[in-house]
Length: 374
Ligand code: HEC
Ligand code: HEC
Image 1: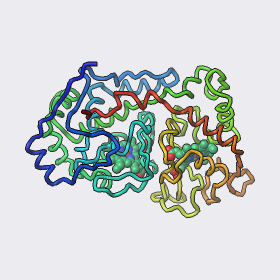
Image 2 (image 1 turned 90 degrees about the horizontal axis):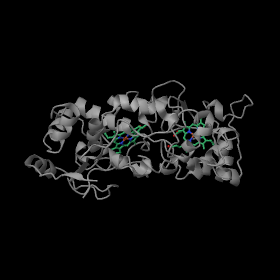
Image 3 (image 1 turned 180 degrees about the vertical axis):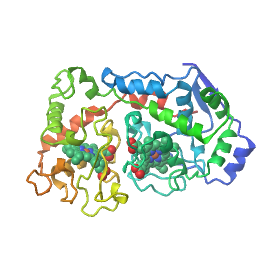
Image 4 (image 1 turned 90 degrees about the vertical axis):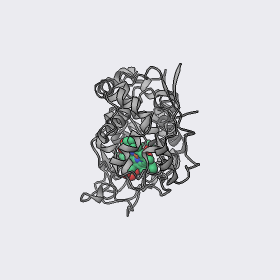
């Protein structure tokens, strides 16, 4: 494909900013090598994504809310460390495409080296998501996208007038803002709109599990699944109770509106929804399990490194917390946690099934990749 190369002359104002900036982080987990921005001559197709028919509602929502030019600008913003106070941290520093847009560490490093208080979430079909963050504190994607920019640990850029000025001084943004919004003007509102269009364009639905769908969700589709995966699926839907919360009838393998305390700690350090609501200590959002094999470590604090550790928790380690979700109680009416005591074989099968939620096409899709490359 023919590429249009924007090579950026380093302007005086950028040099001035760089002078008061710390060294660029050498451990950035993606290749931000220079200010060379490469975009295709024709925009990628964001507005009309290819998705299987059972995700038609997502496809339709994307076409209503995303333009190719808006998402193109949003992609550049998502990967641009200049959105941070110190020019060293982009959204993509903590949300890595190869990891389902999660971060492979428990806590992520922000702009000045401090660690986030929670594990960076994976990004899964946010257009179909009613709540954002582990405590579901944001419901509107457009106001959500500005939060990491101003966050004092994440990107530290809490002066949006200064951000507008900074981005406005960078040559490569002018044509991008013009294409997306008709004029070159950089505003906070346009930054939020473009970033949310890019997020809304991030759709994933081409996993092995999706390809079994023509026979119906959860059907014993032996032409798609191995026998081990099928054993895992039946555990997931039945005995192991996973689908009580991570429902397979939603598009997400998780009620996006749902919350639960899954008995991780008797005395949770992070209160989750309990920080703002009665009797909700240790209650967190039920995350989607799409691409879960890629997005470890797991849970709101990244305490489990592997899916094996996650399954061990559900199998034998659920703590008898007072507000344990009913789906994980033993059914005797005392509120005691269930002891699934899964065998090694059952655990392996369950994990084999979780692996069928991975969309390998999605993590390699150029339109979601870093546009700053050499
Ligand atoms: C320093 C690391 C870091 C940076 C930079 C960062 N994030 Fe995050 N992101 C996180 C963490 C940690 C969470 C979970 C926070 C929480 O739940 O309290 C998160 C959560 C999210 C979620 C919620 C997903 C869900 O389904 O609940 C989205 C979406 C998101 N970030 C988008 C962005 C965008 C857009 C940017 C850039 C403007 C960005 N992030 C920058 C670490 C980061
Ligand atoms: C009662 C509802 C409920 C049930 C039942 C349930 N989960 Fe969860 N699951 C959650 C919640 C809530 C979280 C997030 C908890 C946290 O971080 O504190 C979670 C987190 C996870 C995660 C980590 C995801 C991530 O991105 O970090 C995995 C993997 C997972 N569950 C798999 C399973 C499996 C496998 C089963 C069945 C054995 C299961 N869950 C049963 C509610 C549930």
